[in-house]
Image (tube, rainbow, N blue to C red; front, side, top):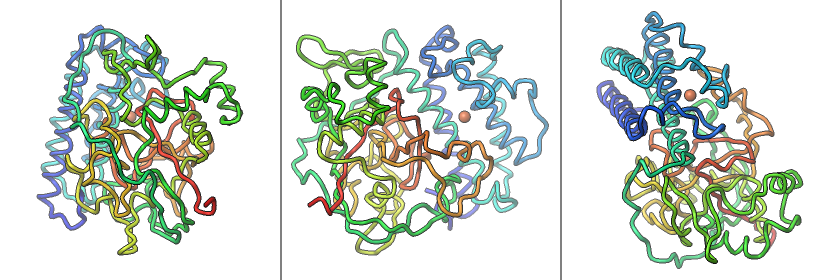
Length: 439
Ligand SMILES: [Fe+2]
């Protein structure tokens, strides 16, 4: 996606297609429940769905109508209601939010005007419109909220509201359990991907010593072995803050899991089912991922290791856009875009593997890395400090690769996500690594 050589009309079509795809998804996620459900807060960690809906419209208005096209504010009085920095999620249900019908009307009106702006946009008029950046940023923003809204659906009590076909069953993966990534420098981040966000920039060389990385994400079966071995009862495996956290909150298994009749069950979008052994483990926090890795005699990969495993092509000594090369993600490469409402079995998507044979780096589950969220050398905040800069620091850990809930427009080999190490309502899993010196 976003080939820098795209002509103006192709770029316009691409921007239009990504905006339409995002809105279709938003409509589905907000149309499958009734109004009381849209205005309810399903968890203090999340906004009411109706907040996301109008916030999506408000961001689009601020960037595409006001910043790009210089239009007057449609409803200046609502800006502060939908400012994510002004109101933490827990507070949002108490705000005088637009009711569902009005939120829908507002988002639709903004969209109609934004499509008009797009139709007449000159893509090299400013940095904001160069290569359609502002349109791509807004499509990514909406898709990120579509992922957030899917998390709200997962936290929501009550019967199933969403359905999707399951991923194709896969034969048990019989390849090597880990892959050696050779040492040496590689190019991390990007300076050429037109819709990449500020924190992915600029491209820079990074020295990474040789390391081994799991071929697939850690599975539910492997994680159950950690639980069965008393992993949650042994402080040796845990960071002190993590140990303290799981004691205080009685964390004994991934979120949404419970034990019944001698087996592990989980609740997934309103349905209770047996935890499938061959799927990547999901809804674990960073502390759990880190503890599992230590129990297994391994560690989490650093962010640079993860990206090298995903983008480094030893044959060409260059970094590709995705593990499989430079082509946009297709349905055979990765489980993305909420086509399925669960990860695919470990070892799926052989067409999406890296040149070294690492699988499922993109899609399925977000992967926790060992690294804090920090700026790359030469980082410059764009187009606003609150996108990334205010989050840099040791309190956030980086997640990579996207989940089944992430749309291809918001997923790249360079894409960086971050969250608190205690968070596990997100679609988070992990894989482990070890340094080669340990041989
Ligand atoms: Fe937002």
